[in-house]
Image (cartoon, rainbow, N blue to C red; front, side, top):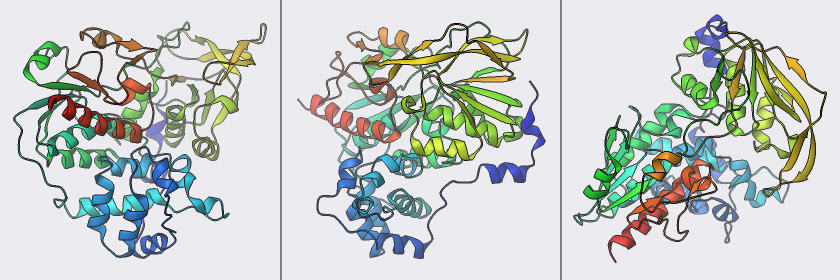
Length: 447
């Protein structure tokens, strides 16, 4: 596979990966904040999974009380910068804005939140919260993604001795490595890690629990354990030729792009992405912006059934991505490296339990698309083996089973949140899970 990316200049890379939504200036932020109606029932607040008091934080912008605004945001969401940049606001807070009903443009809540949190970090995170005195109890957090960071911040402020164990050398989880750089850079995620550290949280990187340290040792050493482990490896396509050079997982590809060493990221001339979720769109647009001549998304169902949001779909189409709907891969063609992908046409059937229509192959409709790179984006596998090693923790439908009101697993000392309990939702959902699990842990250890 030829590395097309090396043919672009640094200036082209910077242009291709510049931010989709640039920050507000002081005047623009004040003007946007002044449009808010400060609704008494705040439908935007209800639509936010972390229930930020959006009307309040925007009102404080209008009075130039940016630190007060930051406090309002952060007390509900400890990864507020990531959410400001990467949240699907069009289907959450901004989608619920009452101005939509009036035919007006909704308040740009995400950009206003970014304006506030950018200012907070620019001021080097002045203290806004008071820690309770140490209670002498300790909690281990496995994973430094949004769920782990949120849980650790909340517990630290409640007086707990918190240690985060992260297998990667660089913390932040998918906030750091799994979000396209034209949405946010990894430095943004690392600012949120530093914020959590200011509360006294100890973040240990390069420690793989289960390998570098036994789970049982953590279990004995700490009063409670929180699992914020996300999901595991990308699912296999289970087709012949998957082992060929040029077949990669979407998360591995995105992680390479996030290093911002763009000229060294391998990308083909003709790239096929299998799957049609939001991660698939990120991988497709990144491949195109790295210089691939043709990028296509292959999806076995119809456009109505794809899990990617409409705004992601629109972004991909603007980037010239080609979509092959009702098309499924049968085989990856090639001897030592990818030369093509054999597909078959599909026809829609009845909806499944999730409301998506099942798709069935149409015999005799096989065809080959010439490609030199295939990116797998059909979801991730749960970390079954690791979870199975923890006594009392159970899997249900590939997710860790918890009590929804406490986030406690079948093992009383073990709690969980984020993608490992929901199968893979938004950063903001994980942030909420981590916070609520912290209060579940607090109640458990105080009773």
